[in-house]
Image 1 (cartoon, one colour):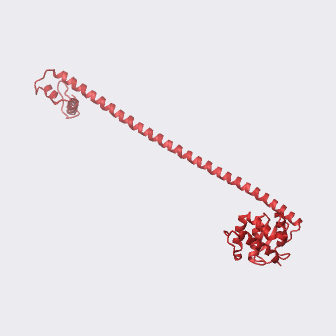
Image 2: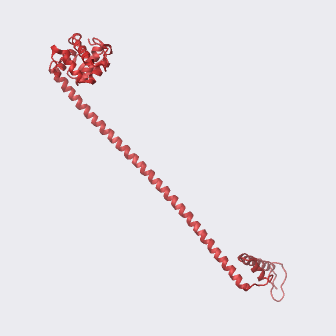
Length: 272
């Protein structure tokens, strides 16, 4: 005899199922009934299946098949909708990823463009600096050559520098005021410089007679610029000492020198 593994009783004749096995089978049957119940769409069909209600025109089996078919179709539709939603979500994610990549590429492009413009700007600055250095060097050489030529022509100081400018402009010494008046009438920027450099002369820039008044002042500079005042150096040009013999004269001398391209330097110290 065999002892039951569930209740410990001895089975006689045909072997009986253990109690735990019978319980498991009943639970499985109940779950099957629940699944069948859940798969049916119509309470009326269930009622007809169990004989609660009389069958209608169609047999209960056909209604059951129709209900199951509708359940299958609904499940398929829900699955398709779920797949569609999944596809939509994936599509949105792909678009967002593509947009992020596009923005990243655009940012990289802008960064590269900014770097390129920066490099071009630096290169242009270097070229401009080189050009300015070349131009400044050329100008220094020209000024040096001009200073040497003026020195060779007898320019030694401020007075002889003014005489050189008169010869350069074709001014007759005997008609100095008239000559400088004509020069100043054609050089309004020089009139403006002289009027501002020597305010004590009391000449207004907009005065129609400003050229004649300033020409008379320039002629008077020859009387105060003695020899060796404001020396002329071949390597530098005209060296003007501020306030010698007076401020209007030294400032006017600088204006005249710069207007005619004469190399000129200012010095604060009084010459020995």
